[in-house]
View 1 (cartoon, rainbow, N blue to C red):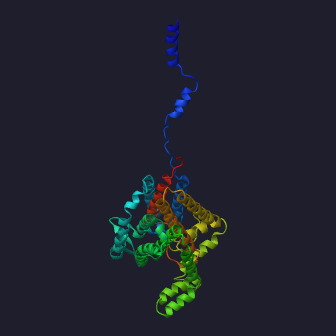
View 2 (cartoon, rainbow, N blue to C red; view 1 turned 90 degrees about the horizontal axis):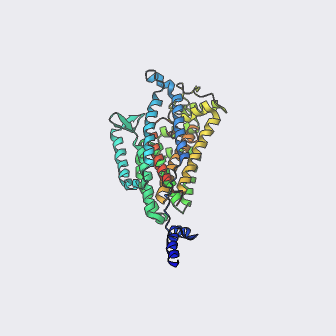
View 3 (cartoon, rainbow, N blue to C red; view 1 turned 45 degrees about the vertical axis):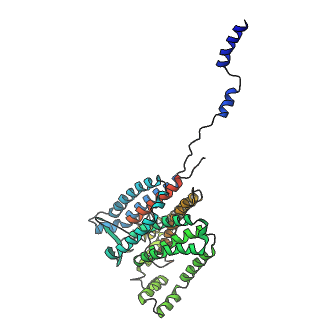
Length: 407
């Protein structure tokens, strides 16, 4: 019987294990690592879609009258062109957003050198518009190389500052970054002063964020504000010592007192102010602008914010500003959570570009600073501008896509 008990006990031990044995073995077995989930900033994506779509609506509203007169009755001419380029840019943005942004660092030097080639080329063979060569013809198409310069400089400076690391706080290395920026900015400013200012502004913001020493940046900012505050006396002094031509000083006078030259230098500024003033709290209504009917030059380009104020009033203008502020907030959030310094600096560079351009455009339209011809991002008409802006957004979304939600 003893033998029978033993043979009966063996299969029992094989078939069933003592309580708790299975849990112990499961605890001892290595757990499979969960795949980390990656973040993708859909809030930023919504902002981009909204601003671009709103821009198409405002471009149609601001340009339909002039388009009907100049393009065989096609009032949607400017909107259709912008929509086609924006659609292509949106596809490119989504593709770039799924690419590892570290790849861009490999091409940063080549892109920077290409910037010089394009800017020199546009100076010789560029298409002249309003006395300035800003457009480079490429077969049936043309584009503004200045937009390429901005994105190339952002990638180069982000790569250079990342390579320097903490050494960026040395004066020599800060000077090296400045030396990389000023020549290309000067080349851009020769044909497009506003873009040259933006290029310098991008480098300024990226250096400000990267460096521990802040007082030089505050000093430069104070000097800039002081120059604006005393532009009249400074202009007179520069004209006296022959560093400023009389026609250049007249532009400063037209900015300080546009009523002094209402039919020439002050005409666009005054018409823009009339549009803003007539908008009131809620505006004249979408499509009901009077100033776009041949009174306000470049109503779909540089001065589109004035049309927004006229048609949608203070409410519409403040709403658009708040959306841009929300976009800046999303940039800051992505930069703070970026996987590395290179990604953070890429986002900071794009943030600086958008913020500077929005501030300068609104300042020009409201006559806070002299007219320098700056477009409102995503909203003003300009195929090259919206195309490269969407590419920059693709880079920012690429950085956001590398943020891990779980380890």
